[in-house]
Image (cartoon, rainbow, N blue to C red; front, side):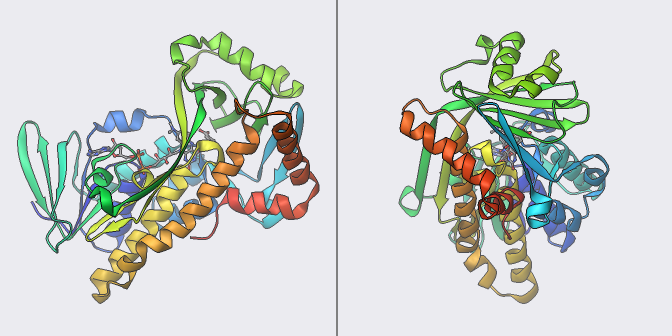
Length: 389
Ligand code: RFL
Ligand code: PHB
């Protein structure tokens, strides 16, 4: 088999890249280790930056997102029971849209099906070859049969644990990492959200987040220790803990119910540099991880592949390698700004085991400053709704 761009991974990064290249007439094949149902069963991101919404529109897959997505003008922060709303629309004229990653992924999969393009699900033992020359190859096993895919380029969109980054010689790659000493326990529940917008809550018992997927489906998180296992958290224990960490009004109006999904996610900041190795590119979680506090992971994946698609389109249309040569530096500049924001949100909102009374006062002062300064609130607004690509 032969294609122009072999894409490893059918998460949002791989599928969106496939769509952007398809729109420019560039052929792709996507190889995905898991089944379609497994990919759609993962509950992950919920918030789309305005730029991501515009990108999905340009890619021609925005119809369902506009019909079902919830446009939010702002978010609320709650510090020890004191709740404050940041109105992004008023501050900078921008908004975010609540529309689940599962839905974005489904919309992209369905569009790819309609176009009759190849995605190989349950592709095992994917391996990358010869990307330092002009004729890269990808080998994989499907239903016990070995296949070879020849291509011009390989896009590594296979997430943090994928094979693409692991295929790069160790001495060509530099990595930067911070692992946080806690995780997020998340539950999904078919009950109306506690508020119209998201509430990010700081409490001495730990962080909590009230989010949603629709007017009838809510997503809630509480900070837990990294060693906590999901089995230790009954629904009742979760609801009791969430109520303690939010303000009284939210605690009183919280509508609880049986969880339909419950999982613990570790928190990590990670960046690999560079993101191009000959004819292999890394994009999305394969290239970087952010803690979920700033809602940046999916959005960064989208902006990476927007830049990569532009570079590859330029290569095929104008025989120019300027875009692909500049890919790594261009995306890393935006990635580091999103890393900074996610780290900052994480550090002001969570309870750290080694935070002393001085550190707690500094966290409180960050909140008071955001409340009292339009400049600080604008900075929050422009980062949360997304910096320009
Ligand atoms: P994905 O989604 O991990 O997809 C990678 C795909 O590659 C496949 N794969 C392989 N395929 C072939 N061969 C191999 N050897 C392979 N190894 C792996 C995998 O099966 C998978 O299908 O990466 P991608 O596309 O880069 O997308 C990144 C996003 O998924 C991620 O950044 C976000 O989910 C992060 N995130 C959030 N991001 C936001 O923008 N806003 C949010 O509100 C937000 N909330 C979250 C989040 C992530 C969370 N968790 C669970 C980590 C909340 C949570 C709880
Ligand atoms: C979510 O709804 O899953 C969500 C929302 C905002 C975040 C992280 C996760 O910052």
